[in-house]
Image 1 (cartoon, rainbow, N blue to C red):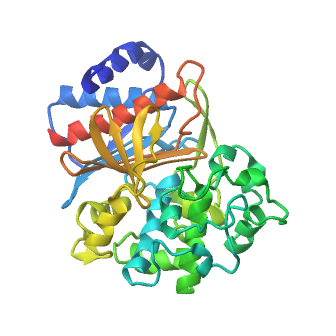
Image 2 (cartoon, rainbow, N blue to C red):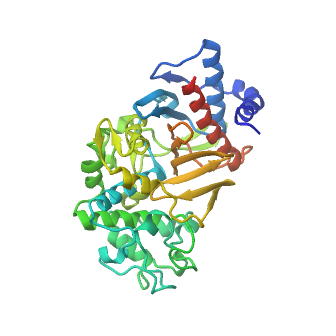
Image 3 (cartoon, helix red, strand yellow):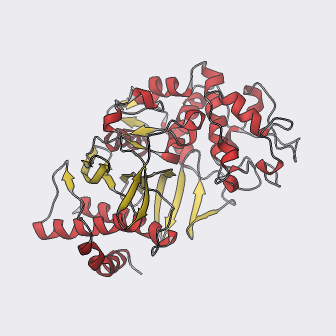
Amino acid sequence: MGKEHRIQTIAVALLFLFLLTPVMTASAEAGTTGGILDDALFNLKVRICMKLEETPSLVACVLNTSGIIWTKAYGLSNVYIHKKATTDSIYLMGSVSKTVTAMALMQLYDQKKIGLDDNISTYLPFDLKNPKYPTVNITVRMLLAHQTSLGDYQHYKNLVYYFPLIQNRTQWIMERLVPGQPLYRPENWMDYPPGANCTYSNMGYIIAALLVERITGLSLEDYCQRSIFTPLCMNHTSFDIDDLDRSQMAPPNFHLFDGLYLPLPNYDTKCLDACGGLRTTASDLSHFLIVHMNNGVWNGVRIINASTLSLMHSIQYPNSTQTFYGWPLHHGLGWIQLNISGDRWEGYNGGAIGYACNMMIYEATNTGVIMLQNGQFKRAGLVITPHQRILAFVDLGYLVLQKASR
């Protein structure tokens, strides 16, 4: 089914549902193109996709290497107080945070302070290996490409694996991955050696953050503020929730049924910052994405060498393929390449409790798309399946891309 046809099919099928439920309010932060009828149809399609995704708000933008070319905010960032979303609303990024952690570590690679094929234990205060393969080193490249043989993805719903959260990354990692420690479980490691296969690992990026801290003597949060956020004028961005204006935060939400949401409190991700705790706005994130689209430079400021950025974008383990709801996916270093029905996208997407985020580049035109939402990413409703929700999420990306190109 073609992309435009699929969007139209969804619109027709859910139009009746849309008319029976309250219409979400849209606030434009930049001019739109096309006539009034085109805008109305576009907004209708967006709101239907939002209903499929069960999210109360959306901030989207499309950009090229010069900056944002279209942006708009929809819905309510805070359903408790009926506050409209704006392009200044701050959202939690989920796994898009990994791209920033990877950038920090690759800046150190640029400075020749670490090598991609170095044994990570060289930089840690303890020896870290898969106990089932004690002679196989885990490398920096494996960390950033999800090839460590760490098994935390299969235990995503096992709260014991993640909690209690603390600030001390060294202690938190040791307790879970070193035999004899209180939270160690043999199943935390896969039954194949590092480098043999891809298993998505949040833990790998927590370890990557610890490497940054051990090499620089700074916390990941302080290092990124100095070396990434400040140079890129990302003034509303931080891993530390206390650094940001809480009144601008879009709180997380849990969808109950048919447009009714249970607002959740903003939460501190502590040692999980590196893999899922970044908070930012669409505008700030666009600066970071332009770096990826423009050979390491935003607004004349270079934060990473072009050759290093190209390495980050390159598939590291071509024979290790994952699928994302049936679409082939390959990993670079803190970066993914995704083939959607023949269209190539690259970047990262993220889901967290009460949030969904998308930061991707459409390779055919080197155009970036950012979508921030404060609704649960993977939970299915009573009628819509998780796969249908993902299709709506993908359709929404194509929809805003088409809007900006008119």
